Image (cartoon, rainbow, N blue to C red; front, side, top):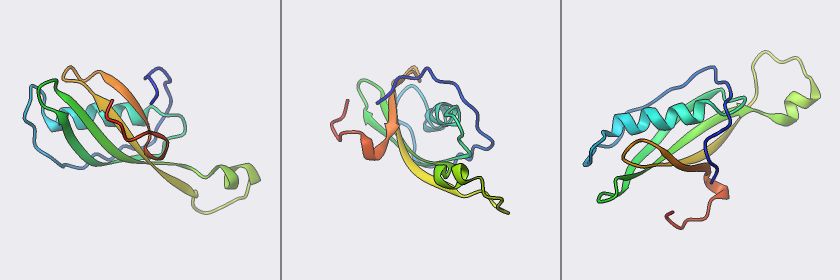
Length: 116
């Protein structure tokens, strides 16, 4: 997982409602914090929250799963003139604490399944 230091740009962020909360913060606050982190990724085009889950009630740790769309690197490098941009979808995980501080994030397929 990466720490949160790299600012970037995003054209659009879509946040969908999901789970309910059982700690100091609401699931909506967690969702918004995670979407904010992911929309800051370089070349991000869209963020769609898939799941919000409280992974440790006592410590107030949360995990958010989201789909993030980026321009297809191969098509972009070819410099083709297209009517629509070709996007690749990647699933990201974001882990936050009860103060909504990001404890880590990264592509789901590159993260080990051990709960950090």
